[in-house]
Image (cartoon, rainbow, N blue to C red; front, side):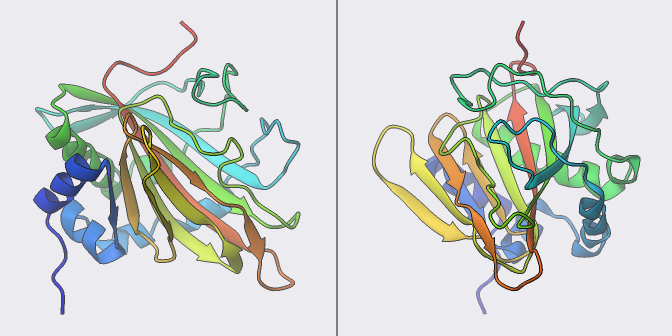
Length: 243
């Protein structure tokens, strides 16, 4: 039986390749987080409100959003007052330049000890790759569904997020096909493709070095399916804003 990879091995791969894909077993081991309390948060994805800002006219995405600051020295995480999610058009051609006010992540999630442990543990991994005093973190709970036939996890296409690092975590995947994740070198043709199927499998990315996207999903039965993810972005230079 293959042993799970260590945190140092995850850091090494991220430093070398610009990304590290961790199976659920690897992620739980490298991040030192237990699975039971994580699973206790999964049902909150069923209460995400519809994303009202989709410029392609779709109704396939639901989400919540929250912002935090992680102080590396003290390994503490502090929520900040609700703020808009904003990206420049240079990083998001579809939704860039738009201040998007999403509903906040529920207190049940933010106040859970496992939430702080997960977010800071990932931040600590990133801080081993790039030395920082603190991370400005944006958290996004996503549900992409197939009620309209096709759901698009990344309607903006292959992109970078304009941050330092990104963590993409699969929470659940039910009744769908598709959803292949693609990660490519930002300065060359090399890349990888894989489909995340296991809850809590995790993709860590250096946003300056790679671009990423996930292909559309379709239902596999008459009933709509869905794909739930948690996306965390880490930025050293403050939150992105039009100012």
